[in-house]
Length: 151
Image (cartoon, rainbow, N blue to C red):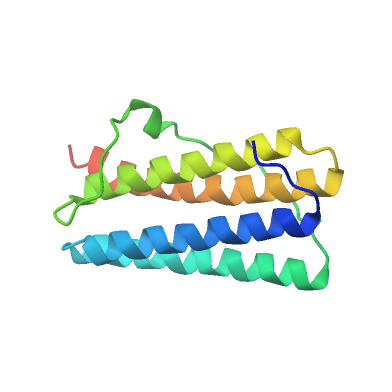
């Protein structure tokens, strides 16, 4: 588990993770030949850019107590096999990859929150975990609507 010595360390880490997510979704969009898949990944890259901007704003203003809400989990990812990114990836595989990435990010932020001693730091990590779970839910709904219902 990464050790943090200040709230700025935590924010820098989270900002880096959001940038990594932006890069991940842009790379998937660039590799995708399917226009719908490209569009979805560009939209999520933009969402991650907004998260990064919010974190930069939190860092500049010093206000980091954010509301935490409960997000539903359809648990679709628990029943899906892992996939690897590829240029010819199907829309189904792209959604699976995105769901698993968001689930991993949720787990990471949840674990960091569980180990945080400061209440404001814990709240920040819980908020970041909630944002990642929202993304996972959106991908699960998309998967349910376009993959499961078609089969």
